[in-house]
Length: 125
Image 1: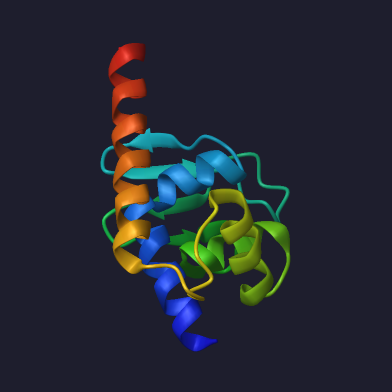
Image 2: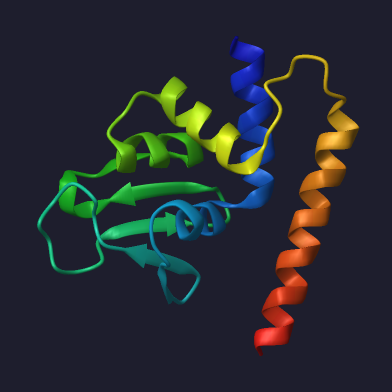
């Protein structure tokens, strides 16, 4: 079970916290090297939840500095535990639960998805 969690976390970190936040919550606003969204648990009008793309972590400054990784972000937004958040992410992205799937196949799938996202971004520009 723990190895499933670790493997999925690696796959999600390759995708990136900003992309995952955009897909499952809302599009963040970029300010320098950081990204901000409104806190999902406070009535704060300002974007106070900060995403750190280099470390794939977040901090919600409006909620006493609540922080975590990619899976923790989804648990925080969805108000569930980390195992439930992991299941949400696995279902959404079609990630492996580490039972019988080859790691190289998964990595190739992630690279393919990232490439498609880059091409999509270039076309928009």
